[in-house]
Length: 174
Image 1 (cartoon, rainbow, N blue to C red):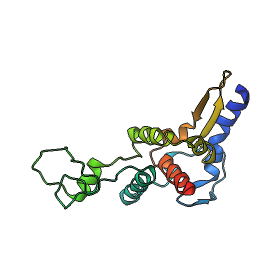
Image 2: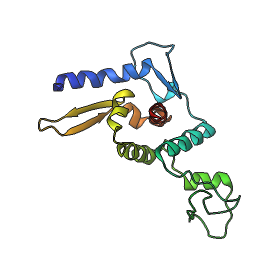
Image 3: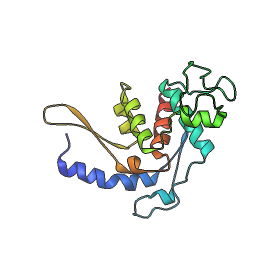
């Protein structure tokens, strides 16, 4: 078990180590800049809407959640699970893009990141996600109960870093 000093030392070291590797789907790239300042959203690549949609869809597939798609353009019924989308006025047709935005999760928003962590936490091996993706610490308190400390870089990030890490980890497990 780690002491409090060792834990704080690790927490202060994490942003520096996160900078050393840039998460991409399927591979890790070495950064070009090795300065000691922590990464900010400004020096991370923003996801395009297409990339964000693809990552959210892939995360849903890997988590076993239905990625809702309309039966036909203008429909409010999901082709896969039959769910009825009840947003907006009942008779207004929705384009496929509007349907995707309204019916499917966006794991890059604040609420979406919390939901993503909830869904990953349901996995029996979710502690490996925290350890392998180096996004936090899993520890035991003095009476033996597990607890997790997460790096705020992943929680406060607006560029999809947590989503990328989750998809990369889930793809590596399969």
